Length: 236
Image (tube, rainbow, N blue to C red; front, side, top):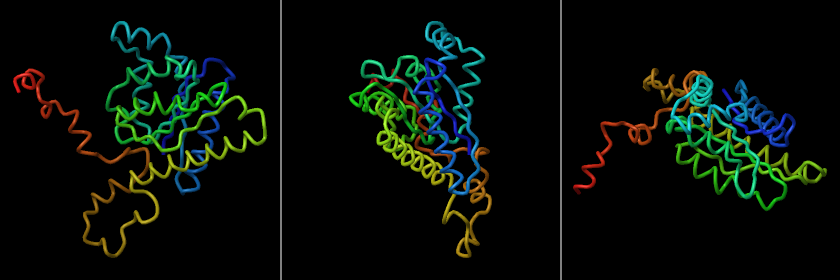
């Protein structure tokens, strides 16, 4: 299983980066507990700031952006973490998701994390990132992880943060395993002897070689041959 972190850390030792690393560690542990091998990659959107600005202004994709967008498409699950400024995730982070291909997250489990000074910003990820990632056809897990300053400075706050991270990570890995037909009950038993073995292998094969199974209702939405031309809509 390939876990990819898309994090916007504006400094070398930010709480956003710390939160991202804690979520990645928890997700990796959850995958191993489920009997899955996991590999984690990390992208700091800060390093793509110039590339994203150039693409927004010119439409030109740099090689760095192409490679990063390809990483997103190839990952099995996504963890996306950003700092919150003035009731919204930092604009550089949202710009990344605004410029990526619309099919990059199709059928892909996503976990949202964010950091801020006070719990008053705890719904920023829900209000801004969840609709955006859902529009990109990502499957966002129910639990989002927000870390305020107090979560890092007290034992009680740390325990609460760790509990939220564990819950969200288990949801992420459980959803990924379910979408890929991995886990208890996924193996063919005696009652399945007549099943198409080729079909079974595409849903229970190695993680990372395949990604989520095809969803016709989503894939067909992006098929140009099935999209009604705008001029025809006007005629109706």
